[in-house]
Image (cartoon, rainbow, N blue to C red; front, side, top):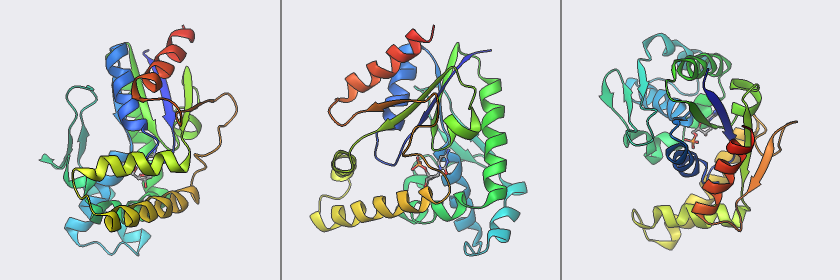
Length: 224
Ligand code: DC
């Protein structure tokens, strides 16, 4: 059984890039769970599903053929064999993903899906990142981390990420609002801002990327 490292945190906390970086350093697999919610949201959009109807969203699950790369150096997301790695980052997907992630049948399906991927992992360990990993998906993980950063730091990191895509100040301000709104929506379903019992908080506000990766790696090493 490989070591499971559970990492939760809000949007813009850097948990995807940090988890991927730490997985690389440790020689572990890396599982981005948000990608599955995004992929299902993408499928619902493509199929013209009424996303105001939880029942119609749940009806898509039997048709959801999903695969994800867990090698940190070979990341991909596929739906029905189609590569959707970049499509699932489009604003039209980001805008509705919280609605998809709120449907109880979807959450149960995803929890089972993630547990299956974790069990099938072949490397010595796997870093699993999301919102409910420390509490629901893998509460028994050997290492459980809540990665936080001040709202200001999260907004400015997200703006820096978007800089190459759209440099307009107005667009960035809009994306800050969208980020806050998405966290608010997601927080109605899962509390990923407060560490559950036994979960170690890493506050990356004053850490750079390498220092944050190192903090995760040190925790894994000290867990033995
Ligand atoms: O981390 P992300 O932005 O790619 O996540 C996409 C959405 O999926 C986000 O709105 C919250 C949701 N999500 C979730 O509910 N549980 C997870 N374990 C991961 C993501």
